[in-house]
Length: 164
Image (cartoon, rainbow, N blue to C red; front, side, top):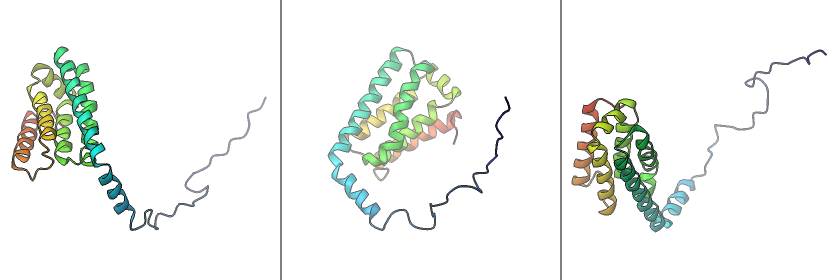
């Protein structure tokens, strides 16, 4: 049996090109409609934020029980990563920033090893997230929120375990 002939096709040269990047994808009112939809969901977003904070606290308690082994930190990191991505959508840019700092702390092997030896900084991040959500401190325009965030970020930076 002979093999069928193969034709090499360069996708850059062949195929339909119907998507025109020069035209706007959204009309002028798309962002306004999206903002209105988020505003209408305001109460629901707070419920989701509260649920994520509860999930993070439960993960922290499991990590405490497991003595903050790197494997136990994975759940904490995954939930913090979710909060990093969704905090601003939930209406709390501060939660996004604190969660980002926590992610930087425990995303590398060096950071995980440090948190395994001394989990106090990871716990401080989680406590700060819980307090900021509980007390509706949503931005760094709040003096206390800004001070807490800057202290946490500085401590993570000083440890040298996190990529920037």
